[in-house]
Image (tube, helix red, strand yellow):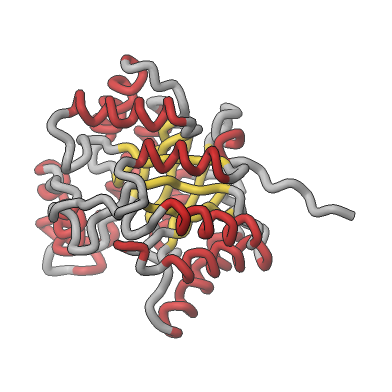
Length: 296
């Protein structure tokens, strides 16, 4: 008996039902590996639409990304998607990665330009024999493998984009190249997400755009993550968090409340689902899930 076909995430998120998904990253050591798989097993109970596994700067976690997504495909009921970037790879190498993913049972890919190896904000240099833009990566993937392809979108524009108009032109190029859906960088305000969707639709991009959500569990850590994408925590959010800055438990609880309220606003405003950046932990995501009363 032949194995059941692997669903394409592009098809799943276009059906009209809300999509709920989780993102993980390859851990650096055995302790991190245990935490990751404990989280995967806990979140598996929630029956998400799919889960994704990130890709390190410069392709630094290539083999672990393939290994983790393959293990998820083999050993769990979850549908895995592997991130894939342009950074540090020739087209031949990207083709080999795709072959490895398909052989591991992974048929869904998130195509990203990727951050430079030296970090966000540093010069981005195309690898000789590789591709320069995410749109070119989408085109290459579509020509090289039978997989469903998603891309990134940016609620306040990519940090390297000259303007919001230039940013949405880049999204349109990815759409034209064959991308089937997008997942946003972490949304800090629901209005930023709705603005992105409005710009995308005006530009003729009609695929699903799923908002990314990251609960604020610490002010300093969230400031750093926002700064990496060229943004800042909204003032109204900081105003709610700062009274609790000396009480980690209270701050965490307020951060989860803020995320829950934003998730409810996103869904009520027409978002096709939610993508949770878990940081390989399950507790905050499960708390938001329960507060939103998402059926399992």
